[in-house]
Amino acid sequence: MSKRGYHHGNLRQALVDGCLKLIETKGPTGFTLSEAAREAGVTPAAVYRHFEGREDLIAEAALQGYGIFGELMEFAYYEGQPSALAAFESTGRAYLAFARKYPGHYVAMFESGISINRNPNLNAAATKALGVLEKAAVELSQHIPAEKRPPPAMFSAHIWALSHGVVELFARGSPGTKSPYPPEDLLESGIGVYLRGLGLIAPDD
Image (cartoon, rainbow, N blue to C red; front, side, top):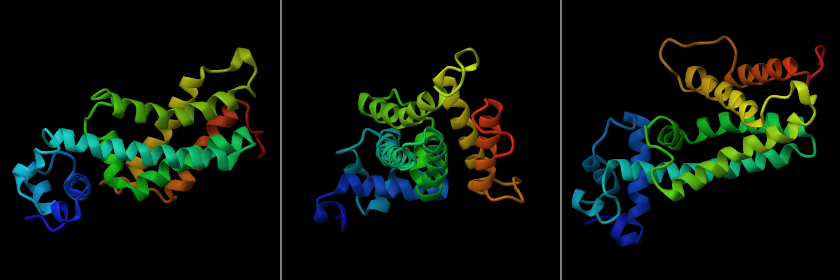
C-alpha cells in the first residue's frame, strides 16, 4: 500500500512528482510506468486510476510546468514595467531561470515529444505562458519604425529560440558544449546584439 499516495490522499500528484524525478535522471523516454509507480510507492495498476499511460503522465507534468512557467514569465514581465525594453529582457532571463530551477518540467514541456495540442488544458496553459513573451514583444516593437518592424510573433520567436538554444547548449550540461561565459551572460549579450540590430538599443549602450 502506498505511503504517500493513498494515505496522503494525493496519489495523482505523487505520481507526477515521481515522474519528474525520473525525467531528470533518465529522460522522458528512459523510464517505464512501473518505475513511476514504484517512485510514488504504489503498484503499477494504481497508476491507471489516474493516467492512461506514460505519455498521459508526462503530459500532466508538462501542464503543471506551463503553469509555473507562466507565473514566472508574468512576474518577470511586470517586474520590468513600465519600460518595454526591461520587460522584454526580463522575460528572456526568466526562461533561463525556469529551465535551471525546474529541469523536469522543462524537459516534459519541450523535449518529451508531447504536443501542446494533446488536450485543451495543456494547449491553454502553453498558449498563455508563451503569450507573455509575445505580449512583451508587441509592446517593444512599437518603438521600431513601422517599415522596419518585424511581426511580433517573429520577434518573440527569435528570442525564444535564442533562450532555448542557450539553455540546451550551455545551461543543462550538454556533452561537448562548453563556454567560457556563464549562460546568463550569453543570453543577455545575445539579446543585446539582436535588439541593437533592430535599433532598440544604441550602439554604445
